[in-house]
Image 1 (cartoon, one colour):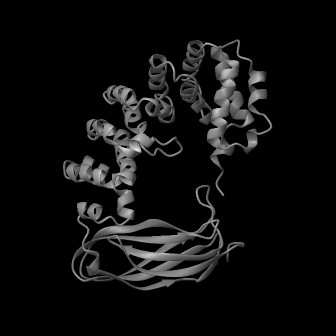
Image 2 (tube, rainbow, N blue to C red):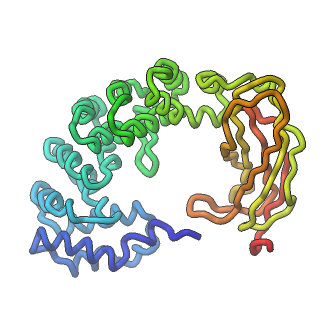
Image 3 (cartoon, helix red, strand yellow):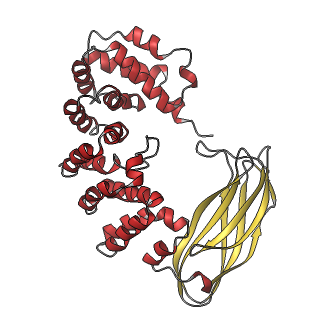
Length: 364
């Protein structure tokens, strides 16, 4: 299994490098006390973000008591701080700077030029969305693309790993001027953030997201890419309106036959190869996917959709073969039980079959 992020960072060695940077910029910094506070009895059991917050709290206990003075130390240290430990710097702003926006928000602009600050800006947006978005609008016009990206990424309603923004999940309209301003940005990173933001919106407000996508699609090659990435959740869900944007044909003229698995019983760690015939009645643009219904810890099935291909097929029958791995991953744990696999064409599941996944070593 790949090494977990929480085991790659916040080691004694990486923390020592981090504290050396703090000490360099604040000679009075008590490194032994900081390490004693950080590596407490519960530290190893903490998840990655909990370790980051704990680091923030230990900095607060060992830096100057004045928020302004402590922030000055961290800003001096920022160019040399590395690793996930450095995420404690913007987190310090989110944790202790909520009452001083005039100091805190410019500090986040500074920090985001070295590492991500989108997690740290969210408590400010949650506390006062109107005031926060007014500031974000100015960031969207900044010369630095990392600051412009922060304007979009920071206000995503459902940013992964971060606190959600329930006000924006309910009504994302305050976000839209930012997205409109940045949809043609010179930076691909900024445009991708716009797409991710719009994808977040689609999960709670699909009609609004689709209205925007329909309006943007066809403006340019770049906006077309944004729309495609923004619609990924809706496309996987088989949303007909989203499928229509990209010209996918009526699923009734596409058929899937002869779904076969290379094995009906496999162990966790094995690969499953499956094959089927795709039959197309008339020349059609086809989005071909497969869904795996994974057994979860409590025995329920959870559907995950994977793309196979999307292209124009002439009339005819086409053999398709694909492989799905069942190795353990940091992002997915497998459980024994009866799983299912289905084949999807243009948003419609055409056929499905089951197989058994067992505990045990990988089959030879």
